[in-house]
Image 1 (cartoon, rainbow, N blue to C red):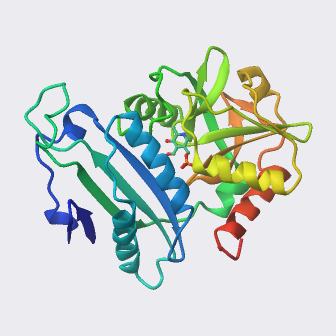
Image 2 (image 1 turned 90 degrees about the horizontal axis):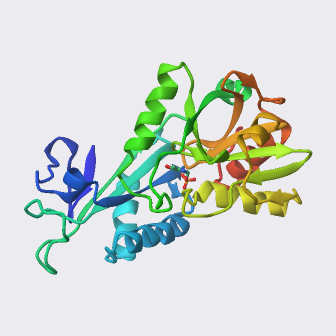
Length: 283
Ligand SMILES: Cc1ncc(COP(=O)(O)O)c(C=O)c1O
């Protein structure tokens, strides 16, 4: 497979990054994941807008969006005929420089830009119908969760804890309120109203969250963007995750408590509409 690294398309096996890369040493970088349906980059512009925000958040305001788009299109064109779903990964770090916490002197290094496109397997119909099980964990992440940084260790540890408990994923709880999951936003439905955490510095502003809210508004579903508690989650009629590759994924249980309607009608409707918007047929 060919990947893009710092201006060149190279074979995956020969792509190499410096031991001084600040992404490697300090997690000093940001990333994006884009879902490729057919050969279309789903909501590219929204992802690029968020990328620019993340870059602003780490004071690395350098990005040639037109060039990134050309690179993305080139990588997508390398997909095989039968590879109709894929994910694009893009990472930008502050580049390589002799290890020191402070930023490298201006002009002394170029950002490291890495991009690949890999085929993905869609979440199975059975998983969607059954829903997934979740555990809750304290949200011990930092106060700039809105930056899509590659510094994901709290998320990694929480996901591992969930997997060790035989669950699919973990839900972060901050001061008794639900923030999100380790790589997805979280919605509940109560008495026909859709709830998800408001955009603050304590959640990642998910592109799928935004798209789902737009779809809900278009379909006349009532929306409430106030913080909701762990108890509200347990009392919900439906609960589901949203994410670029997660799409709309129903939750069956949380800490062993069954959600009233695993894979309920609103999650199903939103997933169908999301697929329609993405031009994905047959579901
Ligand atoms: C912590 C976190 N929250 C939410 C999301 C969902 O965001 P998106 O819908 O843009 O994929 C992600 C995606 O990776 C994430 O890592």
